[in-house]
Every structure is written in structure tokens, then in C-alpha cells.
Image (cartoon, rainbow, N blue to C red):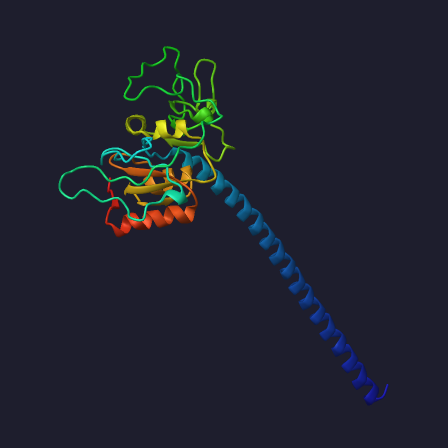
Length: 287
């Protein structure tokens, strides 16, 4: 073989080796890209699972916050005092041009806006006496009661038939009703809160019973145009719905709070809340 032929053969062999190295490198990059895509897919799957779990947790948590309110007659009477929550049945066509005036030194009550006709009688039955105990009543433990092994206690603030109650277990047992007896996890308007401290749960439940929220929520069914305005409370604000009221405006604290029930658009509720703000009537309560 001539020198020229040998050189050409070397060049060919070198090109083949370079091609093999390039092919190996490309294969490695391809495997890396496949692994990266698989990892991204796994991340998306886990992200969706986490999002779903968070939504479920938020839904469970959302069902455990409190807001006292009193139904207001169709006149110019004043809402509840600063130790209870009042309610106004307002719609967008009945919002007064001037907001209520705040009592300065008399320690009186917040003024009242024009009241509209309350919504129609709810079609859903109210809770039975078993699920709606009288305010401030004493509870006698059932002799057949068996504490939950995990030590958890549940308050259903809003359940089936607009009922509520305090439960020592989640599931129903042979002798004891659980929270699921009136709470439906798939119902957006149901509100429940879990506790591990029984004294804290009982204190909060008594605070809830002492407020007027149970009466308000029982007498009115959830509606698409139902809003709430927290004038005094943990976080004064306009609330889009009942869960927003419990979790956002009141944050499950009821003492001294003042709340109005507003019938109309959410934008209208926010406008009414701004009127309260401009008049200096809103107050954030630190518990």
C-alpha cells in the first residue's frame, strides 16, 4: 500500500472513531433528555397531587371558622353592640348614599344602613334539636361515649341542614355520632375545624354558640349573591362567601366582632366596605 493510501485509511479510521464518539455523546445526551422529561412529568404529577391535597386540606380547614350575626328587622334599628355581630340584609339597589355614623363617646352601637327584604324561606330543613343545642347550654357526657384514640375533637360550624355541633370522633361508631354525621367533605359550604386541645375546642364552641352566627346561617340558605362585610374583627374586609367569612374575615374569632350580611355583587360589597373605612368605622381586633 502506498503512503497516500495509508494516509487516507488513517483519515477514514479517524473519522469513524470520531463518528462513534459523537454517536455515543449524542446517545448520552438523548438519555439525559429523556430522564429530564420523565423527571418533569413526575414533578407535574406530584404537583397536581399536592395541589389536590392542599385544596382538600383548605376545604377542611375552611369549615372551622366563626362569625356571629343577628338578623335585622326591616327598619332603621341599630345592629348588635361591639360584643356581638350584627347583620344587614342589603342589596345593590338599597345601599344608602351615606354610611352609618359611628358613636364617638357614648359607647352606643354602630348605625344601620337601609334593610331590604330577607331572602325567601330556605327550602332545606333546619338542623334538628340534636344538632342545634341551645346557646350556653351544658353538655352531659354520654355514658356510652368512647374517646377517639387519636385524641382529636371536631367542631362542625356548618353542616347538613345548616346544623352544627361538637364531636369527639370523625367517623360514626356504634354508640357515638361522628363529625361525618352532619359534615359532607364534598359540600363547599360545609365548615369544620379539628382540634387536639379539648379545652380550646370547648371554649371556641361556646364562643360560637354565644354569637348569633348559628341563627344567621340557619335562617338563610347559601346564595350566589350572598356576601359578608366584617367591620370589626380579626381582618375587616368584604367576604365573597361563608367560607371567606370564617377563614378570612373572622379567622374563627367571634368575640366583639361586627358583621353585616350583604345581598348583591361582590363589587358592591367591597364598595360598601370602603364606605365603612372612609368613615373610620372599621376596627381590627387583636385576640
